[in-house]
Image (cartoon, rainbow, N blue to C red):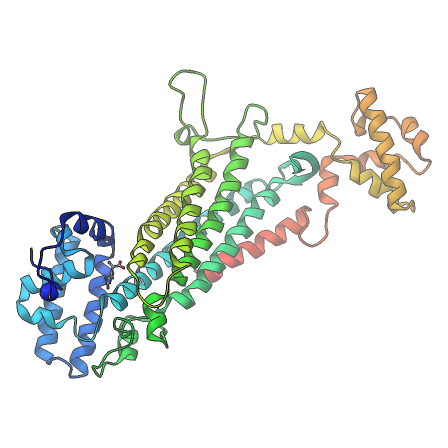
Length: 460
Ligand code: ARG
């Protein structure tokens, strides 16, 4: 099959080379962006008098016909035409004749492919922001229902201090909020137009890059044509942000796995979101959060892959850059799928408030509070810490929790103890006493929830 660039060649390309260099199997995902970019380019060519108005009109109408066929899945892309750009150009020439060959005037595949990627990532970034917001909404809804639910808060995975479950869940809300901000910010750099850079040095035609930018709704054009065709920072940035999002998804998933274990039983995942074992009939496995945790691996892989591709590249375009695509597509799809699954997973889980409350009653996580109690009565905190340490050893030896010790026992450690210590030590009081800004006290969590909701409203 004749190549669009075949003029300089005396032989057919080796089949192995066709297969090895072709990107059409994966870059056909860019078909719509490619046509969208071409429509704007050709309109500009017509307006600038670089091609005749009538030619521009013919090419545009041909491109719309192809777009329609792409939508209907009627297009048969050819490996021999290497990539999406040459496939579309070939389809256009087949559709409208030799005038289709004017489309590529003043343009290179180098600035074309970069433009396609910018268009694709712009759309996907906006969609992913919406997906993140749905996860945030699910976290808010669960928080509202678990305002009064108390569970142990952990450090080192050891029970540390009781917290409100709403507070715990909202911690993830803020992680995803920062992720959204990162995506939003990256749009500034995505929304810059490479087209018009030509192969690397610009073009001899009197093109108007600003006009293409306007037609494609870009805020700006790359000021340097060499940078325009070789920059993939915007993809690196996306993969970095995606990796951070996957870290958050993975951490939350890890908690769901732990909480739903027999040992914890803090939550129960819905049957519709669990799977069974082929051998052990009693098993109900949290495969979904496990897989969400595992998916982080391939997303990090995409980031490391592209960093490695780019690190030694001289300016300007190099074919290595074709390797920017599969990792990016896979990351977009992995992220979309993961976020979309996280929403119903969170919405349908059952929270076992009693188990959580019992866990808090059966530990020493109120020890800090008696230290604070003595400190509030004038004992230096360091000394109070020492006294309570002794009380904890004593209680453990007696097989008692701190609320079970008698007043006599307390007073044998310090005369500062009075009856009010018991009220002080209930998990509810312990949680509610943490009224400092951003703390777990009900009043603070209520304020936090309000702030969280206002973040979502602002964006919608
Ligand atoms: N398929 C190529 C890519 O994805 C398009 C640009 C090819 N340019 C070139 N000069 N070979 O990067």
